[in-house]
Length: 348
Image (cartoon, rainbow, N blue to C red):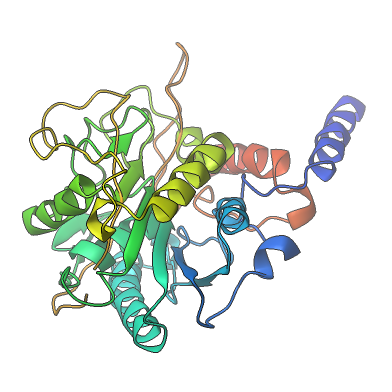
């Protein structure tokens, strides 16, 4: 018992020394101070993962992006971010609502602030939601429920033609075989495939250099068939890829992207978008407008696990999908707590 307490204190002490919030929901004042709906030169729309407290796991990424861009802030997509624990069909209703609300928020903001460059970031369920917002989605069976379909934004009009970057981490609903997805999960479907019309639209953003997705091999959410799988591979995106993601977003926004009139960004070849992708695949950046159908999505994260017994595949009911954590110990403590609580859930 004494050894256990001592080990716990060591973990807490280590977590207290960390100023970042890559591991979990980020309520750091340095992040929360960037929240605004005011007109800005660079404005981020972010969608959190299932059951995650606001503003979600991407807080440190948002902070770094705004540190690299002048006149920058963020607003959250207003949606429940519900998981399976909230009842039958809760995830599908939540994701659908997120897609529609996100389109509405982007449209209203772009009307008020026509000179703003828009940046869209999502994780897990939020990673699917942002793809649904941009390209339409739904009409899929996910976690035992049916997502209602939603239509895409019109790429030729505002707000879509003001979107500089779309970054999706561990999206729940995704299709294998595209070259804008990185980290080994690109050859696997998520919990459900995206509808063809959505994939075709996303391809155009990828060719323009405006879209990138991160999906780890072994992530049981965004790369369902990759084995061995481990929930840690869904939770470590912002531990492993915050700097990488921030650098790409900043450079893409500053360069403008081919779709925004600057040829200096390397787009994905349209001929390679659905050829078998390697884990080193490269990606894109660009803009969007609203349409009329409805449907949302989810996500996952982390690298291949070393040889050994695979961990059980998580579900949207699992506590690992957005565990509220105290901000002071959010790093080491969040990851340890997620793994422990996830294990207890599957044993109950």
